[in-house]
Structure formats: C-alpha cells, structure tokens
Amino acid sequence: MKNYFFSLKIIFRSLVVSLIVTSLNCADVSAQQKPAGEISKTYRITLNDGSVITGKLLPSSEGEVILESPAMGEIRLERSGIKSMVQISAIDEKKSGIWFPNPNPSKYFMGPSAIPQEKGTGYYQNTWIFINSASVAITNNISITGGIEIISLLAKGEGPYVFFLNPKVSFKIAENFYAGGNILYLNSIRTIDEFDGLASLNGFFTYGNHNNNLTAGVGWGFAEGQFTSRPLITVSGMARVSRRIAFVTENWIAPVGGEKGHLYGVFSYGIRFLGEKNSVDLGFLNNKDLARTSIIGIPILDFVINF
Image (cartoon, one colour):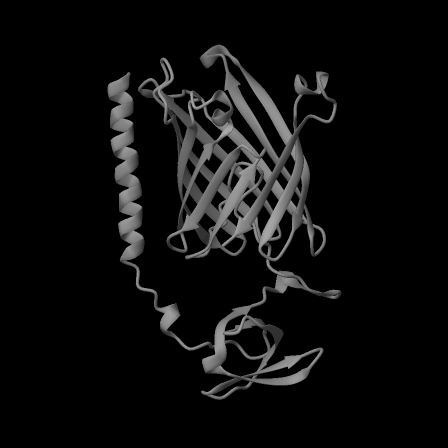
C-alpha cells in the first residue's frame, strides 16, 4: 500500500510543479497597461494613497480619468495617481447604493464553487479555531489551497498534525456558467499506524454569479491503491440578501457500504457576514443522526481574511 501512496505523492507533486511553472510563464500584460474603461459604466478607483472613489466613467483624456460621483459631482483624477480601476458589476449596483464585491464567492463552508479566484489574490481561513488554511490564485484559472490542524498541539507534541493540499482549476465557460475540478490530498506529518494518506478527484459546475450561485459536484476517493466505485455528490448554494449578509448551504450525499450499500446524507446551512475584505460564517452541520444530539446540528464557525 505504501508503494501506491508513494506513487500518488509523486503524481501530486508533479501536478503542483506543473501548475506553478505554467503560471510563471503567463505574462502579466494587464499590469503594464494604463487604466482604461468603458464610458458610462461604474468603476471603483483606488488611488496610490489608498483612497477609494466610485462613480460613472465620463469621456477622459490620455492623462486623466473623469468620473461622475453621486456625492461629489465631476471628479478629475490623474492616471499616474491611480493604483487600480475596477468596473462595478451590474449585480452590485442596487437602488439602495453600490455593494462592495463579494469577498468570498469561490468557497462555501468547506468545498469550493467553480467560480475562479482572480490572479494574485488569496485568503487565510480559520475554522473551529484549530484548522488553518490559505489559498493563493497563481493565475486567473488556477489556485492552490493548503491547510493544517493544530489541535495536535493539545497532545503535547505527539499529535498527527493532519494537513491537506488542494490545487484547483476553474473556468468561466459561458455567461453565469463555470466549470472546475480539484485534487484533495490529505496526510499527516507524524505517521499514524496504517494511514498513508487519502486523496480525492473532484469535478463541479456552478450556475450563477458572485452573489447568488448554485454548485453541483462529484468526487471519487482514492485509498489503498484504487478509486471508490461510487462518487460523493455535493450540492451547494449561496444567496446574498443584503450588502453584508448572505445565506450559505452545503450538502453531501455519500455512498456507504460499498456496491451494495446505501447513501448517507449530511446537510449544512448558515449565514455569512460580509466585509469588504473578510467574511465570517456561522452555520450548522446536521442530519437525522446528528439531530438526535442537537436539533440544530453541530456549529460551524470560521472566518476568512483576504490578502
């Protein structure tokens, strides 16, 4: 069995190296271009001093950008003083005002959506205090996530220190349609008897936008040199109902007992509190068995900080 997982580690490392090399070969053309935009569209402009100005783009010159701000009227900005210029999506333009972009559209409580992270962005996530992870987008379509649990510290240094790695590839294939896949590899720093690691190969599709979306996915586990005969099915969703609140659900249907076994379901639900660069999830994990202990389920608590 060790030979199977030794081969799995080699394949996994080769995949990660290939993804990194591919991303480094991609030229960052956009970074070399001057800020540009489409007339009459709404933009959020960040200046070199950190100031943020939002307004509709008016006809501008080569040396300056002109915005129409509801609060300040016509504003003229020198292009040399602009750090970034981002068009506000139509889904974030509301009668009550402009919403900031959803800071965490690519992830539910645990699993991902097929909406890709933007190149150069990343986040740190802490779940249940003891699980720490980080994700970085090395291109507009490729990101790598890794994490480790620190509850092993309570075992006076004798714990297993379980870690995971999770490269993801995702693409926009049509308006409001996304497709993606990832490989999840889980192992421990300290050897556990008869445990040489686990892996899963997953594919998923997302319909919707950054604020409201639905994702369906399937995944095949890999252990003891072979894939599972039946896949794990996931169905997840997100609905942003206000500037700072979204509802999130993530649900799993797992095959239990091999070919002649049955399906076992677990569902989750909760609220995501949104900030411009962070989010906090408060949810519950539940099914018919967990409800016998707690009718509302097991709490899920995590926070995400973007960088």
